[in-house]
Length: 427
Image (tube, rainbow, N blue to C red):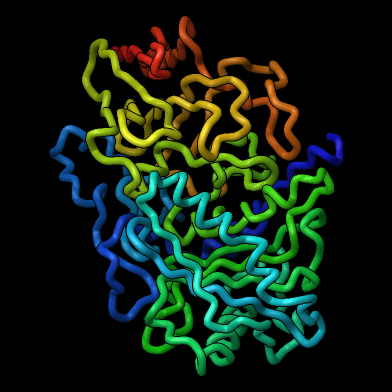
């Protein structure tokens, strides 16, 4: 692989130790109010409000309680809310052995306003993300970076617990933690290795063991280190994207990359690949986060043949997602992806079909995209994009078949407005 197209598996080795101390408990779309006792919002959102006896009930798959960050709908309580106005406490941290270089607000500017814009676009304006920096300079930690033992795969205890405790103690005179939904820690890039060597950035989400500040638990926190700059010249446009990925965890989304990198999902979701050119979230994730209304989701649970309209996922309004449940744990999701909005690398517009398994842990392949053009090499040469799956979409005249399960999805046409029609047949 050419260095300019470098894709690194981000934290596969880290997952076992991190998720052991991270609860996969989530809910989307809160009320805009804080929940007493936690730096999260636990109010039920649009998906949680749906009864399983509703038309979408058969498509509300769920995983066992032991699954880490399940893809199930709805996710359980504990994550930050993902609709309405959320306030992200954002601190820029340095260490005695790695003093911050330049102004701390320059580090902040590496991620904002791009992160806000990304979430506004992806959520169709349903998430009003507001970063807050009550401390404008570098927040110096009392210990050296190396003293915390932060490395790839580092668990919450003891290093990260001590780091969060020290952040709380240092920030407390100027920060009322009750005013925020989650914590962003932007570490000075000269602490730790280059992202080309290893990626340390990590989130602890729904963490019931987190320290308490101002009477609330710092349960959802994202840590960003180094810079994801591969030398291709795209960093000024794309370097911020590690933060939307990490914040995806505090909203309850799992890692979709595997030990091989983004090979299961490719560049079709930022929870799979956050290097390189911009990309959006899967429609399944948008439903989980409360960014799609129930009327925009179709549940193809009945036997027989039915046709459905799909409008481009990047556009507001219209039907977005068809789900074909296989059992109470898994099913196929069907959506239309085009080159617009956050999806700047889509090189083969069409219908994306992927399997979702709510019984698979984060980072172990809970989502798998089905490739309509296997072994083609893909249609993109954009740096840090998994090329093979870039042309995975199905276009009019093509169909996906799972003969074992008796499921067939055919793309039967497209109209001048950009909408597609798909025909779903179940045995």
